[in-house]
Length: 112
Length: 114
Image 1: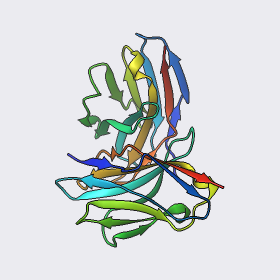
Image 2: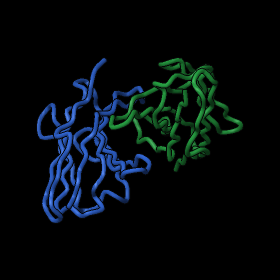
Image 3: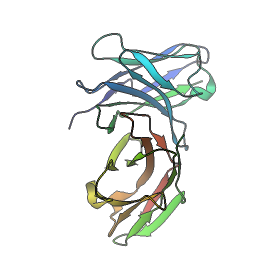
């Protein structure tokens, strides 16, 4: 089965630093997403991306967050100035038009 | 906007017993429904999905779920669980307008006792 990959698996950063989380979606997919899961809580939608622009974002996705698809394969999430409350597992997902989203294994972000 | 309620935060069952994990949703539009499983320290794996057609859907690992539109429910069932089914289970909904965001429930931790 095709896979979404994410790097790094674990990122530790200091408060106020910028981080970039990377994802390689499934190659023929058109829709891309970022979700996060704070420890012990439910998975929350952050942003969706289609046709090289954001199609929807949640209230969590404020000006500190940005997404980019810099080439034909990568999809990145940047947090400009991390806060302690950004510590979470971040999942990337991609889908075709069927509605099924394939999730990556996640990046655990720890902000100290 | 959609929302999902998983009524049980934890469900302990004995091995080989049947299990039902409950999920209710609310939405003003037609929806797609999903169950995902998360094993410890791993990502989300799709168990099964309802997009249209038969209201009884079968997924991987012997799980099935039934879409009940009148009760706005999508409960997950397995007739006989194994130790390896110990995991967190998430119900999710999206509207059916193309590939839309998923809205997840709080999750149900299924613990299988020997």
